[in-house]
Image 1: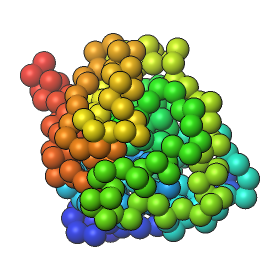
Image 2: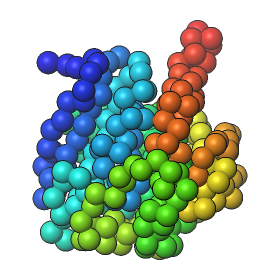
Image 3: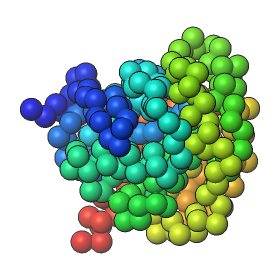
Length: 251
Protein backbone atom coordinates (compact mmCIF):
# COMPACT_ATOMS: atom_id res chain seq x y z
CA UNK A 1 0.00 0.00 0.00
CA UNK A 2 1.38 3.42 -0.91
CA UNK A 3 2.07 5.96 1.79
CA UNK A 4 1.40 9.58 0.87
CA UNK A 5 2.13 11.15 4.26
CA UNK A 6 3.35 10.43 7.78
CA UNK A 7 6.42 8.45 8.69
CA UNK A 8 8.56 7.09 5.86
CA UNK A 9 8.17 3.54 4.67
CA UNK A 10 11.43 1.65 5.22
CA UNK A 11 12.89 -1.43 3.58
CA UNK A 12 16.19 -3.22 3.17
CA UNK A 13 17.31 -3.64 -0.42
CA UNK A 14 19.86 -6.30 -1.31
CA UNK A 15 21.88 -5.23 -4.35
CA UNK A 16 25.16 -6.69 -5.66
CA UNK A 17 26.05 -8.16 -2.27
CA UNK A 18 25.14 -5.02 -0.29
CA UNK A 19 22.24 -4.63 2.16
CA UNK A 20 21.03 -1.03 2.18
CA UNK A 21 18.37 0.53 4.38
CA UNK A 22 16.00 2.75 2.38
CA UNK A 23 13.39 5.26 3.56
CA UNK A 24 10.59 6.61 1.35
CA UNK A 25 8.40 9.59 2.21
CA UNK A 26 5.03 9.99 0.45
CA UNK A 27 5.50 6.75 -1.45
CA UNK A 28 3.25 6.71 -4.50
CA UNK A 29 2.81 10.48 -4.72
CA UNK A 30 2.50 11.88 -8.23
CA UNK A 31 5.19 13.68 -10.16
CA UNK A 32 8.89 12.96 -10.42
CA UNK A 33 10.36 11.27 -7.32
CA UNK A 34 13.32 12.91 -5.57
CA UNK A 35 16.36 10.91 -4.47
CA UNK A 36 18.45 12.54 -1.73
CA UNK A 37 22.06 11.41 -1.23
CA UNK A 38 23.53 12.21 2.17
CA UNK A 39 26.94 13.35 3.37
CA UNK A 40 29.68 10.99 4.47
CA UNK A 41 28.72 9.08 7.61
CA UNK A 42 25.26 10.69 7.81
CA UNK A 43 22.18 8.48 8.06
CA UNK A 44 18.48 8.56 7.25
CA UNK A 45 17.61 10.09 10.64
CA UNK A 46 19.89 13.08 9.99
CA UNK A 47 18.15 13.80 6.68
CA UNK A 48 14.60 13.19 7.95
CA UNK A 49 13.79 16.77 9.10
CA UNK A 50 14.67 18.06 5.62
CA UNK A 51 13.05 15.31 3.58
CA UNK A 52 9.82 15.33 5.59
CA UNK A 53 9.27 18.94 4.48
CA UNK A 54 9.66 18.30 0.75
CA UNK A 55 5.94 18.01 0.09
CA UNK A 56 4.06 17.13 -3.07
CA UNK A 57 6.42 14.38 -4.26
CA UNK A 58 7.85 11.04 -3.27
CA UNK A 59 11.24 11.48 -1.61
CA UNK A 60 13.64 8.69 -0.78
CA UNK A 61 17.10 8.21 0.62
CA UNK A 62 19.28 5.41 1.91
CA UNK A 63 22.00 4.58 4.41
CA UNK A 64 25.26 3.83 2.64
CA UNK A 65 27.19 0.66 3.62
CA UNK A 66 28.34 0.86 7.23
CA UNK A 67 26.10 3.85 7.98
CA UNK A 68 22.99 3.88 10.17
CA UNK A 69 21.04 0.65 9.63
CA UNK A 70 23.09 -0.61 6.66
CA UNK A 71 25.79 -3.16 7.55
CA UNK A 72 29.37 -2.77 6.38
CA UNK A 73 30.30 -3.75 2.86
CA UNK A 74 32.54 -6.80 2.62
CA UNK A 75 34.80 -5.09 0.09
CA UNK A 76 35.62 -1.50 -0.88
CA UNK A 77 33.57 0.03 -3.67
CA UNK A 78 34.17 2.80 -6.21
CA UNK A 79 31.97 5.75 -7.11
CA UNK A 80 30.67 4.19 -10.38
CA UNK A 81 29.77 0.99 -8.53
CA UNK A 82 27.76 2.64 -5.76
CA UNK A 83 26.08 4.86 -8.40
CA UNK A 84 24.96 1.70 -10.21
CA UNK A 85 23.71 0.23 -6.92
CA UNK A 86 21.62 3.31 -6.19
CA UNK A 87 20.09 3.32 -9.66
CA UNK A 88 19.28 -0.37 -9.41
CA UNK A 89 17.18 0.51 -6.36
CA UNK A 90 15.52 3.29 -8.36
CA UNK A 91 14.66 0.72 -11.04
CA UNK A 92 13.10 -1.58 -8.44
CA UNK A 93 10.89 1.30 -7.30
CA UNK A 94 9.82 1.94 -10.89
CA UNK A 95 11.67 5.27 -10.99
CA UNK A 96 12.96 5.54 -14.55
CA UNK A 97 13.29 9.33 -14.28
CA UNK A 98 14.26 11.00 -10.99
CA UNK A 99 15.07 14.36 -9.53
CA UNK A 100 18.36 14.14 -7.68
CA UNK A 101 19.72 16.08 -4.69
CA UNK A 102 23.06 15.51 -3.01
CA UNK A 103 24.75 16.97 0.05
CA UNK A 104 28.56 17.06 0.47
CA UNK A 105 29.83 13.50 -0.30
CA UNK A 106 26.37 12.75 -1.62
CA UNK A 107 26.65 15.74 -3.93
CA UNK A 108 29.69 14.17 -5.55
CA UNK A 109 27.79 10.90 -5.93
CA UNK A 110 24.86 12.82 -7.42
CA UNK A 111 27.21 14.25 -10.05
CA UNK A 112 28.51 10.75 -10.77
CA UNK A 113 24.97 9.43 -11.26
CA UNK A 114 23.96 12.32 -13.53
CA UNK A 115 27.06 11.75 -15.68
CA UNK A 116 26.90 7.94 -15.61
CA UNK A 117 23.16 7.67 -16.31
CA UNK A 118 22.35 10.37 -18.89
CA UNK A 119 18.65 10.83 -19.46
CA UNK A 120 17.66 9.38 -16.08
CA UNK A 121 17.89 12.64 -14.10
CA UNK A 122 15.34 15.42 -14.70
CA UNK A 123 16.74 18.05 -12.29
CA UNK A 124 19.82 18.23 -10.08
CA UNK A 125 20.37 19.96 -6.72
CA UNK A 126 23.93 20.08 -5.36
CA UNK A 127 24.54 21.30 -1.80
CA UNK A 128 27.85 22.03 -0.03
CA UNK A 129 29.78 19.92 -2.50
CA UNK A 130 32.60 20.01 -5.01
CA UNK A 131 33.70 18.71 -8.41
CA UNK A 132 36.95 17.46 -6.86
CA UNK A 133 37.01 15.13 -3.83
CA UNK A 134 40.59 14.93 -2.64
CA UNK A 135 40.37 14.79 1.16
CA UNK A 136 39.48 11.34 2.59
CA UNK A 137 38.74 12.77 6.05
CA UNK A 138 36.58 15.65 4.93
CA UNK A 139 33.47 14.17 6.55
CA UNK A 140 35.01 14.35 10.01
CA UNK A 141 35.50 18.10 9.64
CA UNK A 142 31.73 18.45 9.93
CA UNK A 143 32.06 17.44 13.57
CA UNK A 144 33.66 20.83 14.23
CA UNK A 145 31.33 22.79 11.98
CA UNK A 146 29.65 25.80 13.64
CA UNK A 147 26.15 24.54 12.81
CA UNK A 148 26.98 21.09 14.12
CA UNK A 149 28.21 22.39 17.46
CA UNK A 150 25.27 24.78 17.86
CA UNK A 151 22.53 22.34 16.83
CA UNK A 152 23.54 19.23 18.72
CA UNK A 153 22.67 17.13 15.66
CA UNK A 154 24.10 13.63 15.67
CA UNK A 155 25.38 13.30 12.12
CA UNK A 156 28.05 10.61 12.29
CA UNK A 157 26.49 7.16 12.76
CA UNK A 158 28.95 5.23 10.63
CA UNK A 159 31.30 2.42 11.55
CA UNK A 160 35.03 3.02 11.05
CA UNK A 161 34.94 0.68 8.06
CA UNK A 162 31.90 2.47 6.67
CA UNK A 163 33.72 5.80 6.82
CA UNK A 164 36.87 4.26 5.33
CA UNK A 165 35.00 2.77 2.38
CA UNK A 166 32.98 5.95 1.73
CA UNK A 167 36.19 7.96 1.80
CA UNK A 168 38.02 5.53 -0.48
CA UNK A 169 35.16 5.55 -3.00
CA UNK A 170 35.68 9.26 -3.62
CA UNK A 171 39.42 9.68 -3.00
CA UNK A 172 40.84 11.31 -6.11
CA UNK A 173 37.38 11.44 -7.71
CA UNK A 174 36.57 14.35 -9.99
CA UNK A 175 33.75 15.36 -12.31
CA UNK A 176 35.85 18.05 -14.01
CA UNK A 177 35.79 17.43 -17.75
CA UNK A 178 32.38 15.76 -17.59
CA UNK A 179 30.16 18.51 -16.19
CA UNK A 180 29.85 20.28 -19.53
CA UNK A 181 27.77 17.28 -20.63
CA UNK A 182 25.08 18.32 -18.13
CA UNK A 183 24.33 21.59 -19.95
CA UNK A 184 20.72 20.61 -20.65
CA UNK A 185 20.10 19.46 -17.08
CA UNK A 186 18.41 22.05 -14.81
CA UNK A 187 20.82 22.41 -11.88
CA UNK A 188 20.73 24.34 -8.61
CA UNK A 189 23.96 24.69 -6.62
CA UNK A 190 23.64 25.81 -2.98
CA UNK A 191 26.55 26.80 -0.73
CA UNK A 192 26.60 27.86 2.93
CA UNK A 193 27.78 31.40 3.58
CA UNK A 194 29.93 30.25 6.54
CA UNK A 195 30.88 26.79 5.28
CA UNK A 196 34.45 26.11 6.36
CA UNK A 197 34.34 22.47 5.26
CA UNK A 198 33.27 23.10 1.67
CA UNK A 199 33.67 26.84 1.02
CA UNK A 200 31.34 28.57 -1.43
CA UNK A 201 34.10 28.77 -4.04
CA UNK A 202 33.62 25.05 -4.68
CA UNK A 203 29.96 25.59 -5.42
CA UNK A 204 30.80 28.46 -7.73
CA UNK A 205 33.31 26.20 -9.49
CA UNK A 206 30.57 23.64 -10.04
CA UNK A 207 28.05 26.14 -11.35
CA UNK A 208 30.61 27.66 -13.72
CA UNK A 209 31.13 24.27 -15.39
CA UNK A 210 27.44 23.45 -15.87
CA UNK A 211 25.92 25.68 -18.52
CA UNK A 212 22.79 27.37 -17.15
CA UNK A 213 23.26 26.22 -13.55
CA UNK A 214 21.94 28.47 -10.78
CA UNK A 215 24.35 29.24 -7.93
CA UNK A 216 23.14 30.62 -4.60
CA UNK A 217 24.68 31.14 -1.18
CA UNK A 218 22.41 30.50 1.79
CA UNK A 219 22.65 31.18 5.55
CA UNK A 220 24.55 28.64 7.63
CA UNK A 221 27.72 26.60 7.44
CA UNK A 222 28.36 23.09 6.18
CA UNK A 223 25.26 21.46 7.63
CA UNK A 224 22.80 24.05 6.36
CA UNK A 225 20.45 21.45 4.77
CA UNK A 226 19.83 20.09 8.28
CA UNK A 227 20.09 23.19 10.47
CA UNK A 228 18.01 25.33 8.08
CA UNK A 229 15.79 22.48 6.90
CA UNK A 230 12.56 24.45 6.36
CA UNK A 231 14.17 27.15 4.23
CA UNK A 232 16.21 24.67 2.19
CA UNK A 233 13.21 22.39 1.63
CA UNK A 234 11.23 25.37 0.37
CA UNK A 235 14.01 26.40 -2.03
CA UNK A 236 14.45 22.86 -3.37
CA UNK A 237 10.72 22.44 -3.88
CA UNK A 238 10.45 25.75 -5.75
CA UNK A 239 13.33 24.77 -8.02
CA UNK A 240 11.98 21.29 -8.75
CA UNK A 241 8.55 22.70 -9.56
CA UNK A 242 9.98 25.03 -12.23
CA UNK A 243 10.36 22.43 -15.06
CA UNK A 244 6.69 21.44 -14.68
CA UNK A 245 5.59 25.07 -14.78
CA UNK A 246 7.76 25.75 -17.81
CA UNK A 247 6.29 22.74 -19.62
CA UNK A 248 2.76 23.94 -18.84
CA UNK A 249 3.58 27.41 -20.16
CA UNK A 250 5.03 25.97 -23.36
CA UNK A 251 1.89 23.90 -23.90
